Image 1 (cartoon, rainbow, N blue to C red):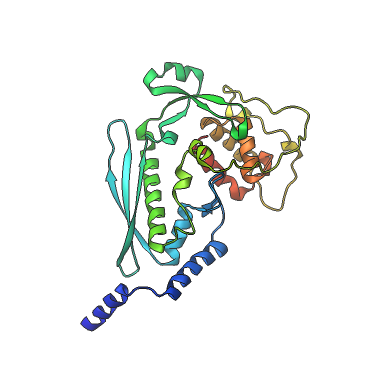
Image 2: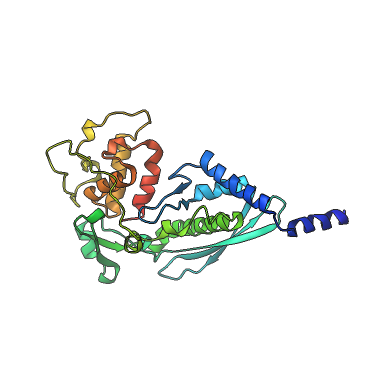
Length: 302
C-alpha cells in the first residue's frame, strides 16, 4: 500500500510529455468544436479581436471534460454602501488532489451594478442629488449621443447577483489556469465596459451590412414615458418570414424591449446592436436559441 502511494506521488510530480500536452490541447479544441456553442459557451466580443471569451457554461464543460471539482472559498469585503466579494476557486481532481485555483471579485460599485435608468422623471427628481446622475453615451456605430437619467441601485437588492458574478469570474479563471486553455480562450474582455473596448481597439469594427428600408416611415423615437407593453416593434417586423429555427414569441419580444429600456437602450440603438451583432433586422426574427444571450447583454447596459 505504501509503495502504491509513493508511485502515485511520483507520477503526479512527473512532467507531461510534449505528446501529452498536445493531446490535451487537441481535446479542448475538439470539445470546443463538437460540444460548445458560440454565444452560449464562448463568444467573440465585438471590437476586441477574434480570440473567443470563455463563458461560465463553457468553463463548466471544461471541468466536466477533465473531471475537475471546483471548491469556492468566499471572502466578504462588503461595507454599508457596497456589496463586494472575492472568491478563490480551488480546483481538485477526482481523487481530491489540489491542481490550482482562480480568483474572482465583484462589487456593487461596478458601473453596470451601481446605476439603473430611472423609472420616470419624478423618481429621478425625488432621488437625493448624491444618488442620481445624467449619463451621456456616444451613439452606437457613430450615431447621435444619448443621455439617460440614472439613480443608484440598492446594494442589498443585488447582493446575490454580485456573489454569483464573483463566483463565475473565479470559476472561469480557474478553468483557464488549470487546463492551460488561456491560449485558446480569454476571460476578462466580456467584463470590460463597451466604452473601454471602443477606445482601445486597433481598428474600428466594420459594420456588418446596411439593412435596406422595408417601409417608408422612419424608426419610431424612443418615448421614456411609454409603457413597456406599448413599446413599438422595429419597422419591418410585420414583413418577417418564419425560418426553420424557432423564433421568439411576442411576449418575449416585449420582455426584451422592457429590459432594454430599463438598461438605458433606445429602440434605435437596440436595432443597430441586433443588426451588427446578429445580422437581425427585426425582433420577430430573433432565434429562441440566441434570446437569453441577447437578454444577458442588454442587462449589462450600454
